[in-house]
Length: 428
Image 1 (cartoon, rainbow, N blue to C red):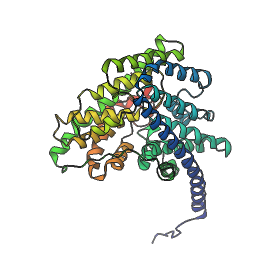
Image 2: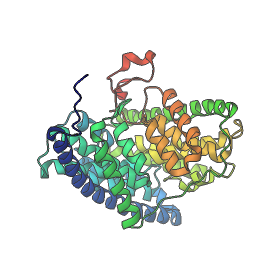
Image 3: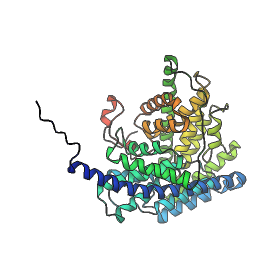
Image 4: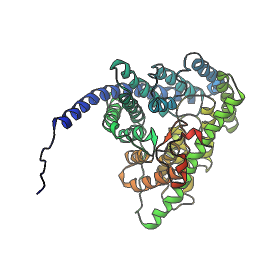
């Protein structure tokens, strides 16, 4: 009879695990509290500047001036952090030097100015960059090694994302899934989950800064017919995510090619956005667009809302304004889902919710995180619809994404094997 080893643990197994757990419990908790508090202050400030802009619409005419202020500030003191989220990715792949702490106040200032003067942008980029910059300072303070630094960046991303949207599960998985397309780094799971939970607690419970509530009141039975209808919806969401990414990169390239002096790019872009707002006679396509997102779950909206938001946001961000892409992606997806309700026989709220996270999945290449976000925001009843839509959108977005520096760890299909290991920004 074989000699069985009945030892449950050995010192060589247990003690390193215990040290790892205690170490990252302490560090992730501190980072989570700091990042969650930063997000709370950011969300309160963002709400204030949005209300001020809507009450004083004349300020949109000053968007070129706001662009000059943002561009000049980054040109003078922010060139070391101007890459934003892509810089976090690049430092994760090839650690060189600690991310300057100035990234946090600069992106906070740039985002608030963008929203105050009427740009179309989001908020996730700001929270993620603040979280990443704060977390990376622990590299110096604790004299951590290269691999530990990668974990720190993951914690910062998880904490920032979790606290700004109120989705700790999605925040943790986004940080793990976002770094390498098609791969998850399991050594960072515990720190990421701790940081995400603590950051969400700090923002929502400690500082009492809450988030917009969404609901899908009717979820149909998951029969074969309804299952098949998810596929075309998911394809549309994936293509919309791809269009969003391509449009943003297009405008970035145009401004870089024709305007060599960086501070002038947001001046020209700001003038174009302000003129478009004047021509359309509405502010629904600038800022975060939360009211329109909420309306998409229950009201009939113009079918072209998602295209208008893609155009305004890609122009704003491509010109060099600051913020994020995720909330505009929510807007794009929710309004596209609303439009698809005229063609696809599923409840409008369900299609809006599927689009909300589906377009996000396609544009960021994070289907698991987006599925969890949908469940956290809309409830588990819609989980299968949400999950399939996110995966289909992920596949049909191709090897495109809003983050140029993302590296492909596992291609989406055999036909894309030649792209394995490349950066998204290296493809056309």
